Amino acid sequence: MPERETLERAHEDAREGKSPSTQAGEFVREEMDHIREGKHGARSTKQAIAIGLSKARRAGVKLRAPSRGKTSAKTRTQASRDYRKGQSRSSAKPSPKRSRATTAALKREGHSAASRQSLSKQAHASAKRRGSTARHQSAMKAVRTKRRSGHNPVARKAA
Image (tube, rainbow, N blue to C red; front, side, top):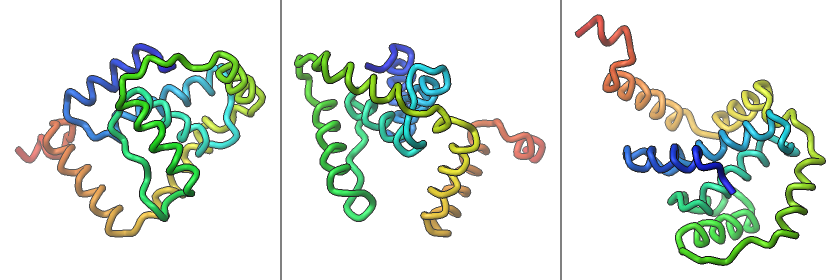
């Protein structure tokens, strides 16, 4: 179950009109914090991110399952299951036995998945898989956002 602060931050992002992936980022951040503080571990950075995205979907973030070709069929099925669970208001409580088993399995994993080095490696690998056009577009969007939010000191001097 996600922490209350995480849910509040995600809801705030939703109210501000931020994208579902930004809202889901709060859950991924929470997962990284849990790994860092020793609550549990993860086999890889990719697994830690996947856990965070799954929690986000189950918490009601409108983050669709990835499209065909990007991930395995098993991952897509699980993601769509999580999405449906988050969008419906079912009162079914999670199985305590299964919950304990999951936590126990994660406790046996290492804690390097949330290190600065492994996060950087994951981000670089992820960016490399995207095309140059996509990278260029996101860079241009960042510039536009900077200009609008007033956090860019260069844009302020010019005005």
